Image 1 (cartoon, rainbow, N blue to C red):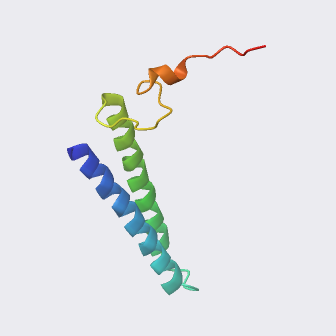
Image 2: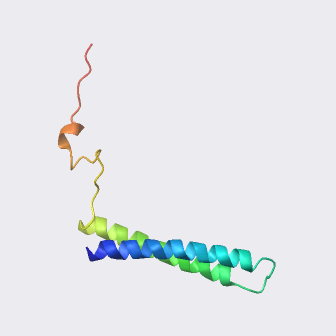
Length: 86
């Protein structure tokens, strides 16, 4: 459960950083000396990498799993091959 909360917080932080970068893009228009947009991009990339690492860790350890109907582990009867009729 803690991992899911961490994933949700990281996703919210990525979205927040995205809108922060948009604010800096609009407010610093024409000012070449401000690097706030570049720093916001670096923060967003770091947060996205942490988010991906958390998702991969959760999938690897089995704390999060697929709920997709086409997942072979959930529906093994759907993976049998039906022979074609002539």
